[in-house]
Length: 318
Figure 1 (cartoon, rainbow, N blue to C red):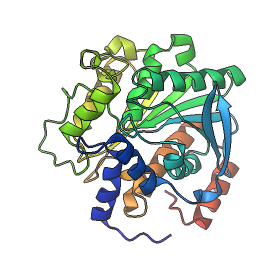
Figure 2 (figure 1 turned 30 degrees about the vertical axis):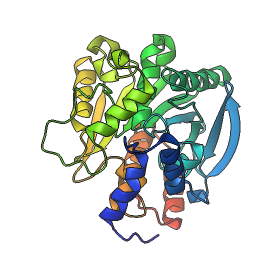
Figure 3 (figure 1 turned 135 degrees about the vertical axis):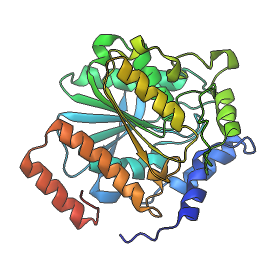
Figure 4 (figure 1 turned 45 degrees about the vertical axis):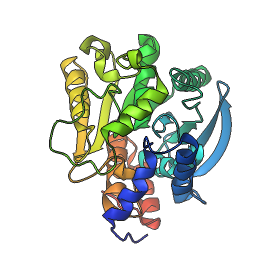
C-alpha cells in the first residue's frame, strides 16, 4: 500500500482518540468508532470472539505466530471510549508484527463504570488465560489510558502471577492522572492538552484517588517495580506525556528492572494509529515486533516465512 504522507490528516484523525471537555461522552464515542472502525481486517489476520473470565474478547490470529505466546492488549480511549471494533485494525497489524495471538478485551468504560471496573475486567481475562494454560508466555500491551489500566493490573497482582508476564509494551502511556508530571519542555502537543487529561481523569475516578498507584502508576515506588517484567515504552517526541514516560523508565531501571524507552522524533501522541498518513506508523509497530521476536528467538524458518508474507502484503521489513 502506497502511503501519501499527510501530517495534518494524521493529527485530525488522532484527535478523535482524545476526549475534549467540549465533547459529550456519547458523541466522543461515536466519533472515535467512526474514525477507527475498519470494514476489513488487514494482513490476513483471522478473528474469533470468545468470552474469557466472562469478558467478551477478540482473538486475533496472524498467519505466522508463536504458538506459546499470547498478547493481552488494553486499548486507550480516554477511559470512556474505544472498543474491540475501533482497535481491531490496529491490533491486527500489531498481532502480525509481534507474531502472536492478540486478545482484546471489551472492558467496561467510565463514567458509568469508573475505576476500578476496567482493571477488574482485564484482570478476569488475565486470570482466565492463566487458568487455561500457565505455560504460555504472556505479553501485556496497552496504549494511552490503557497503560494506566494495564499497569494498575500489574501493581495489584501478586508477584507469582506477575512473574508469568514476560514483557509489558506501552504506547504513548498515560501514567499520571494527577497531571503533576506533564512535560515541562517547550513541546507543542498537537493532540493532547492538560484540560483533556484532567477531564478524562475526573470521569474515571474521584480527585482524592488520582495518586493511587493503580490509577497513576508513576507514583509507585521503585520497590513496587522491582519484580516487574521488562518494559518497552514507545512514544513521540512531541507528546506532553514524554516526561512521565522518561520518569517511569528511570524508576524501573533504578529498581533493578529493564526498560527500553523508544522516542520517535517529531512524532505525536499515538502516531502509530495513523498508518495511512505516516510512514513512521508502520516502522514503529514493526520495531516493536522486532524487539519481541528478537527477544523470543523465532526460528530462522519462521522469520523467513514471516518476512515473505510481509513483503507480499507490502509491509516494510527491517
